[in-house]
Structure formats: C-alpha cells, structure tokens
Image (cartoon, rainbow, N blue to C red):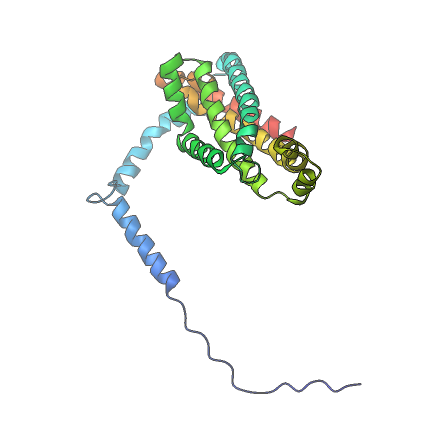
Length: 261
C-alpha cells in the first residue's frame, strides 16, 4: 500500500473581488424602465388609472366565459379557407425557395454577382413584415384569401430560403469535390452532392413554415386577407365577444389536435 499524499497546508487564495456588473446592470435597467414609463419621457403609465380601468373588462370576460355555441358552424368555412391558404402558400413558397436558397449560398451560387443579388433581394423580402404584405396585396387584388395567400407565399420564400441557404453553407464539401472530380457540372453537383445533405432540413423548414402560416393567417385576416382572422375581426367590431370565445376555442382545439396527431 502506498501512503496517501500529504495535503499541503497553506494560506487560502484571496477571494476575487465582487463584480459590479450585475448591480450596475440592475440600476441601469431600473433607470431605463422609469424613463420609459414616466409621463415626461415615456408612455406615461399610471398605475392608479390601470387599476381603475381594470374593472371595465369584467363584462367582456363574462361574455368570453359564456360562449355562443350556436355560432360554431359559422367558423367551419373560414377555418377551411385558412387551411387552404396555408397549404398553397407553403407548397408554392417552399418550392420557389429551394432554388433561391441555392443561389444565395457561396457553395452553390454560380458567381459572386448572383450571390450578392440574391442575398440582397432576400434581405428586402425578409425585412417586410407579413402584415404589410397583406395590406399591399389587399389594395392590389382586393379583400379575400388571394391577398392572404400571396402575403404568406412571400413570407415563406424569405424564411425558407434564408434558413436553407445557411444550411447549404455548412454542408460537407467532400461529396461536392468528388462529384466535380467525376465530371459533374454545377447542376449535377447540387443535385447529387448537396441536396441529399440538406433535404431533411428542407422538409423540417417547410413543415415549420406551414405551422407559421396557420398562425399568421389568423392575424392577416384582420386586415382583410381572408380566413378565420377576417371573421374574428368582424365579430370584434360588433363587440360579439361571446362569438369570439367560440372562435378562440375552435382555434385552440385545432392546434391541440395537430399536436396530438
């Protein structure tokens, strides 16, 4: 048996000084919040007014807790319209986003000019929110699901092309070099060396945008872009909160069923 090593007894190292970053950060957060909430410099939040006005929502909540179930059949058509908008926008948008993503990647873009032009256009497409697209298309083609579908289509192109182009940038270059060494051109290299590597991500991004479409189309309908959102906005305008409760319950049940399936 070997003897246990002797532990050298000595002075403990000095405790490092406490950092002032957290206290200074908390103080800065408090000061910024005070300026943001003050009447002179910010939004002018008054807690007393907030407490006084809270009672006005009692009647609205009372109607929410007593839904008008007879209105439920009226939500079937708009919900079907919302689903159709989401499916068409996801299918067409993701199909268009596939070649756009390859042109926006340094790995598969044919030249620097195409790469920069494609990235620049994608930046503009992503910078515009979907609700602004809906307003533009409502003014262009009129109120209805076509405006909402076109808005979602551009939204899908921007999201999927951005995510997929970044995935293409990170692929393994070994298969690409092997395909080029075998005499494959750029199109064949993209098809057989790049596409198999990014296909699972592409499918995942497409399903993700379809879920986003269901959520976004509810909001886009408020500006006249069709779907369940348009019905929701109409009932809100007439203060039919009992009907709104039915719509919200239907939306929640559909999302729950999609999660369970």
